[in-house]
Structure formats: C-alpha cells, structure tokens
Image 1: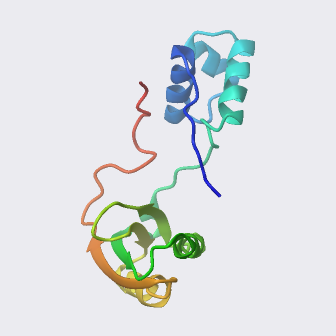
Image 2 (image 1 turned 180 degrees about the vertical axis):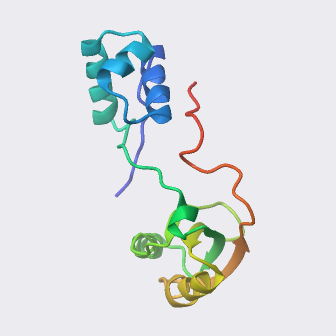
Length: 162
C-alpha cells in the first residue's frame, strides 16, 4: 500500500489562514477572518477546504513537558537486521505503540531510523531502550544521543509560509 502525498494548491489567503492558526489555533472564525482580511463565510469555506484536504490535520494543546516531569530527550539511531518492505512495516507498526517515542524518521544514512524519545529521566530512558526499543522487530543495534538543551521544537515557532 503506497502512501502518496500531493501538494494542495493554496493562495495567499490560505497561507495567512494557516499562519494565523499556527500562531493561535483557538481563535474564532470571526477573528481569523479579520486577521486574514476576509469576511467570515469565505474564511469558513477556506478553513473547511484546508481541513478536508488534509493541509490542516487537527488542533491540539501544546504542553510544557518539563512541567509534566518529562523533559529528558534522547535521540536513538536504530539499525535494522532486515530492511525488506514487510520488515519495515512491522517495525513501523510496533514503534507507533510505544508512548515514549515522539517521532520516528526513516533516513537515508548508515542507520535506518532516528527516534525522538521523551522520558522523565535517564533511568527511565534506559528502561525504555532496553525493554521496548531493543525489543522492536528486526532491531540489530542502537546508538543514543542525549539532548542537553532544546533550542527549537515543533509547535514553538510560526509556520513557514511560502
């Protein structure tokens, strides 16, 4: 099953809608319309189209991980023993079931995947690595890099609008 993504045609009003919502996803449609220079109804139509086309995938709360006691970040390189399509699908499905893994990217590199793992502390990370990540299907080896400081993270910067 192939997952193809196609770019959606957008004009300047669409880009302004996206930028405004990235800045404040809780603004009302009326406030959004004013911010982008449209009347309410055309703004609603554009917003609905952006949601239905998948450009806007949803809205969520952005929490402060440190205030929740989850400010330890480690990046884990994963090398697989098998990179045939069935093995990749199996690995991908298993990764999605591990709550501590925030991001998973397949890379063109000397390793196969890069994981962003968030835990309370290094002891908890060690347990997640040993009990969950190393037990993922087809894992041959891992390497860990611990973040010392987060300079920029998803959700903390304005949308880059072309």
